[in-house]
Image (cartoon, rainbow, N blue to C red; front, side):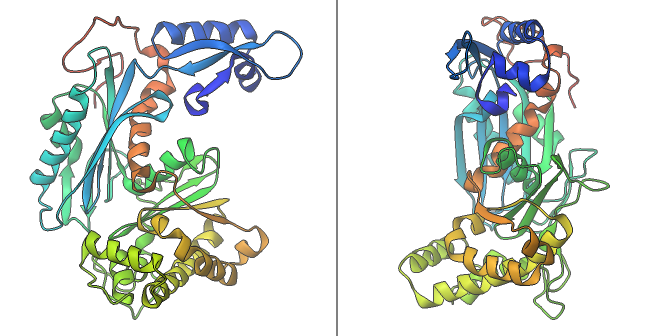
Length: 393
């Protein structure tokens, strides 16, 4: 509760947990001894009685390393409790250099650089990785990444060998990570039913239903970019034809605007500038893609009935140009949306939603049971990171 709220009073913790005041006081004291929270000045609530002390997370104790692999870039961030980014960096990468070793070397180098900037008193407790690909729930093997051309990559093992840190490594699909990041710390904070749509070269998605991530039988739920919308449409990189990705992805948007569909970020920047200037071709392309976006969302809304749709990546960036036509098609084609309107909003963290979600994934073992993690002294600086009672995977 403190992690997701940022700052909360002891009285509010008592009310929200249903525990008595002395139990909450004891728990706060134990968390404080482990360097996880700190008590501060009382929060004035306007209610009668003595003001209750505030409780906040400490950002100078533990941290996780978050890593993100996209088609055009790799990113790393060091993140402490409360979703506080100590440092982060995203580096563009040419699409021609997608071989696994080159990308992972760059990713590990970026992560090592950020970790070495931290003082020895900051303790690493986990590593979270998000990637544009299929990641089974049961292991850290990336099965396939159609837009990178990878298959059967033991990602956690490969990164552990490069990073040399003895902490748990959690690997997740970037859509799932993006949904988590936006729900815990972003625009969808506290929303129990949401759909996250991440547009880049490909289209990914993350689904949260009833407050829980919807992973499916083996963790592959959310591959919404490969739902069929046009049987006579363009071939998709996945091997099928007419996937949603082929009509709302980057290539489709650039092609409709008269730009090279393989132009990458340079062409996207040109499109952005043209749209901001009011260029007719750019705006027409946005409207057309917005309609395909809304059409696909209509089917998903009929199945999932989310309270909120969050657009990340490319579609979040161009939300202002896509939203009207997308909402119109959603309303026209979804029975559910007519009865309970679903909001469509841009992601708060933009391209970094999945990076924040990867950090959240890495923090989960600590958040689930912080009392299994021993306290430590500021002078204890084991070079390979914190190794507590949790097993290393």
